[in-house]
Image (cartoon, rainbow, N blue to C red; front, side, top):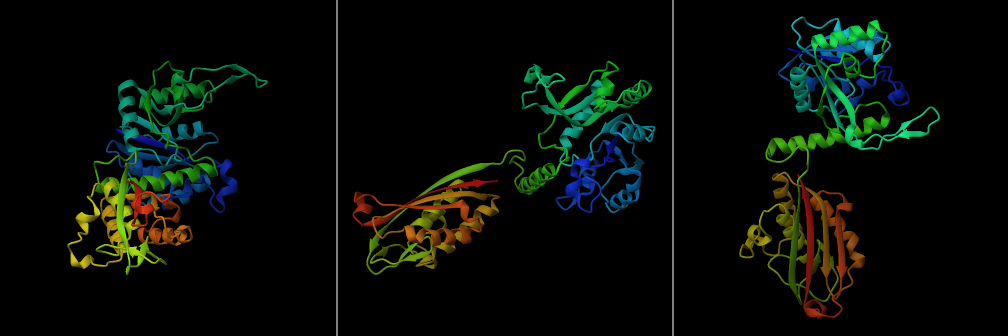
Length: 405
């Protein structure tokens, strides 16, 4: 049986200028709920975690009780008064362990992005080896320095890890470690440092770099960005279980189209009517740029091509505004869980001069696709008088589209 202890009694000194009316960083909002609740809800999803002990400052007990009481999706919890140091807070929490507890987890309440799988791996390792900590490989070069800030030596980065929480231990080991620290007046930097003094082995469990501790205002902004991204991926993963939660899936498609220039037709490019003596011949409005973009989007999503979805044998597409077809394609790719990351396109035409019309074309396309203007690139090139486009027989267009899910 597992009990988890959450130190949350810190003074939040490095956040004071950012907190405003909030007194504790664990009460700050992240994704519509407090940092503290996000953390506790993740641990409550573990079938093996049975009890939660939240250690807070004495003057915040009533507020934490109110917050926890309003949340129905938590395991059994109790609140304990913290101490002047993190170590003393956890020592207070250990006094309230249920007798049947076998494994104790200690996790910073201010690490709300912890992954459930990491929690389970720490429990498994603590059960097997007696002690375990979550950590990630150190990405920076670390230097040992002397009292005058001169480099003494550089430890091999391959031997270094950045330690996080949760940290898990068999109950009797952790209790023994805290007793020894108290008797010898030793103050450690984490729970593992106390257990190390017993000569016990501690297993390192690979965690996630997103499991950050919210200590500064910058940490909170990063956590918000990660939270939004995780939510997007989680929603997509529920609909598309074969996709990865950790790595977005990117696909790129290519599109090409060409139409003949004739008299008596309007010249429509990207939904914009361009003044010209000739227009493009086609079953629809013959918007060669939009057709290339449609094929690029369909290709990236592996959904066929424009002729498959809008055949020129179907009268309902006769002279249709191609932006309506583009809107329909956007619905198709969204239904498959795709989001547009980028569109890049080129119109190849000897005449007319298209540069003055490109801003309006980009605006039209971005509005139909409901994406930011910056995600839509439209360029225009001549053929230097070469080929059918250079001879003003027609206009062609190329496009690429990158999708993500």
